[in-house]
Length: 359
Image 1: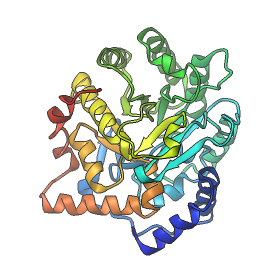
Image 2: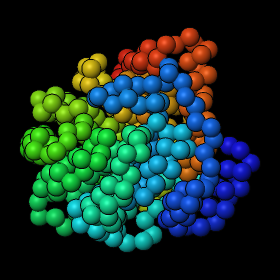
Image 3: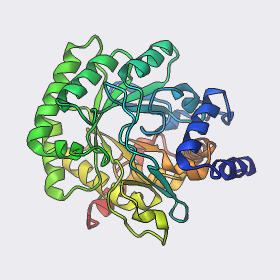
Image 4: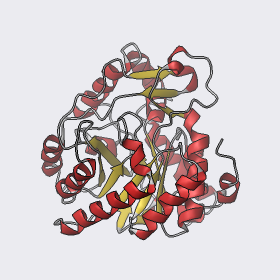
């Protein structure tokens, strides 16, 4: 981390996490901080689901919930950015405080609860950026008090299909009661059928990804893989935050309820990633997320079976220059290893990760 990043982090850490998050969004909206020179290397390009990603590193959903700064994020060096989670109606989310830093663990616990300004606000911003280029995905969810959660996802597909490079169906947040039960096979089958039908009826047909939780057992992973294949969903994002508390150093905030993200999530999320690659086969698109905070962890996700990787919490601790550093490191690695593309690296540690226990 640069001296400037350290100073910026120290300043932001004087605020509570949610205030710091808002300040970082405001800074990006104003053009600060300026991103490093973007690395352009043809060996880092990834073609997936009809999209050409300039590099395999993306910003995960949860940071830019209201589609305020996707282009600024791309300017930091990300190859793509995912906005949301967006729900049909605005909602305030869960009571504050609801974000907790576990600094000694380089982790965060959040129980935000899909706080966002709703479809209309996000759509207005996405319409305004049409023609700017860059890959921007939209992560869609359901309102907490919805009487038809599947209908909320249909609405999200219909609303954002014309503007999204891809759509992510998020049923894996632990902070909306009952949401994760939609990963069960029968409910998942209905959901995927209806979101595919909604995309077919839309004016554009972007790829659809399903974002799953890391807190799943083998039988549940098998059911999800079977439904994704049967319903011809384009890909999987592995994974969301975890409700487990793996190998945490002593930290008062560790007792808080909510989803854990950051460095401690890397191990389990990467095991689940590899298991899903085994179940889905070599052709299905998979995005790996969870604990990515360096070039090494990003490359290990690819070795474990990911086509693309995402981060969020890593940037809280690594600063806004982190994506640029990771992408530059990937380019140097490709040069040193004489790789023609990052695809040559994928699955090279697949068996090693898939054989690890999920406990």
